[in-house]
Length: 163
Image (cartoon, rainbow, N blue to C red; front, side):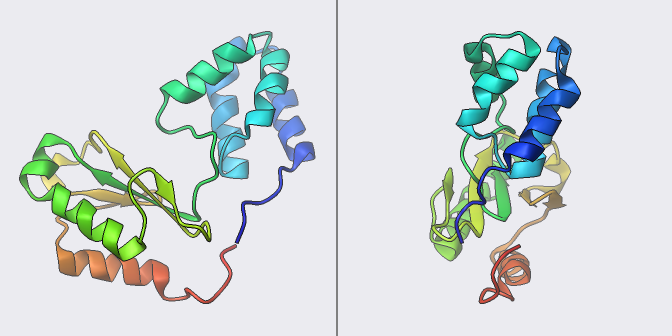
């Protein structure tokens, strides 16, 4: 699976909706990313123009916020917490298992764009340590066996083409 082609009509509609709203940059970027799965670098100039900003300002905001990405991500995004509580409770071993099982390192996306693996400084769920997010779902009190169960949920239909 390759990342989908940019739907310029959809992108233009999102930009038009926020035209002239300097304060609307982050909501606009989030909306683009939700619609396309990432923010295409080719979209920076039209976004900047619509909001009367410099392209470097738009790029700077994208690069500053970890939740925004200029690269396509996998259909399923796993975020492993590396904060203090998770680290003390075995977060590094959770990350090692995830890397082994998915066959990718942190910050990478699988060649078939099925999975992305990321690390975060803190997920804010220290009471569930060690914790990760699978897409938008928090999963805590992780163990090797629990990771196997979580991943089986995402890999059961491995032969099917992701949506």
